Image (cartoon, rainbow, N blue to C red; front, top):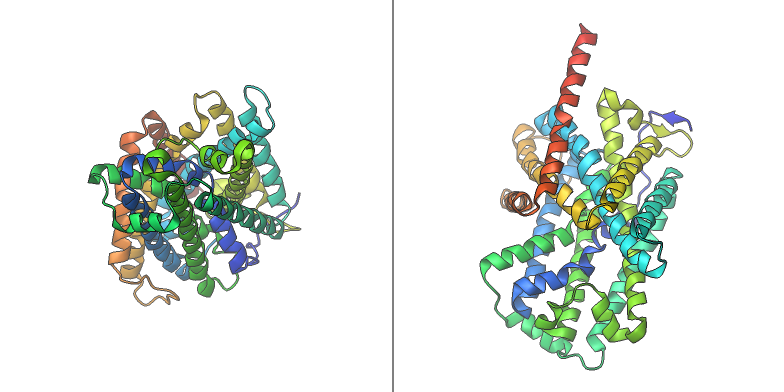
Length: 449
């Protein structure tokens, strides 16, 4: 395999980039969190309004990223923003944390979610979920090495399949015989019912924002989107807007069919599908979630490799990771390194009580720490580069980025307070990157001397 130092080609259309974004966000979360949110919301109205509020906060973040991505396009995404705003040390720590904690942990978590449901279709023994998940990581990574166009087309198909399945489930739930609430009543309840206490609503919002998570991955597409200065905002708004519509429609259908109390008793989506499709419900649910998980996994692998590629382009010890395959111009070594780290985490998670939960705890504090720093970087750029050409500017500045930063700060606190030792391990591994950076800096100074 020959490598090249050329930049990544700008091949992604708005549709393909939006499909990657939607595919990353609309994954296993939407099939798991609605019952948890229902338990904390307390009423149909609060339940729907909380999902709408989560969508509004997501749009606020997307608008911030649209300005950053269109003004500073780079396949390194946040690595590029943080390095420019705060210096190479912060950019390096982000790239290190993304490679070893955030993205690799997220990939392992989705791999476990895929494996759990694939195991119900094709059982492979005690460690079957890990085997299924590892196989998906390997297969999709190999596919991405073959070319961006191939993986982009696959992402469009997976995303369309996921959207079709969610809409089909929503319509079936809405019009199923015996549903306790008709559509009109559900909408009326959503508009008029009150909610539960602020503390419980805040906890429900944590789960909702986790389910909306992943939209920021669009930052790593900015180096490969056609006419990025014009299309970046289109990708972010089209992608996040589609996700919000899907989530609200899906949750309205759940409320319409079950009511808030019964929905709070459901554990996964199998319950609602069983009610609609009878004995075929479990198989349909497993197949739907497998497709959604593969969509998320493919998109997450794609964007994760771009941040590792940026690490190699920017920092000498990892220079090999910043090269592209000469024939198809994909960051092949970065993709392979990411797959290796993710597979190691899958192996670790396989011996834990709950591999998926372990990976969520591992990644959350580091993720929200850097989301906060990325949000504040927008203020740094506005102050430091007032005359920079900005194809898109955040509306209602500074209120919109302040709202985004306040949300990130709250979730950073919540993730440290409630994730236990897993989050602390993730933070420790992040800090382990600091001596690596200092050693590289010292060697560079010695070479120059």
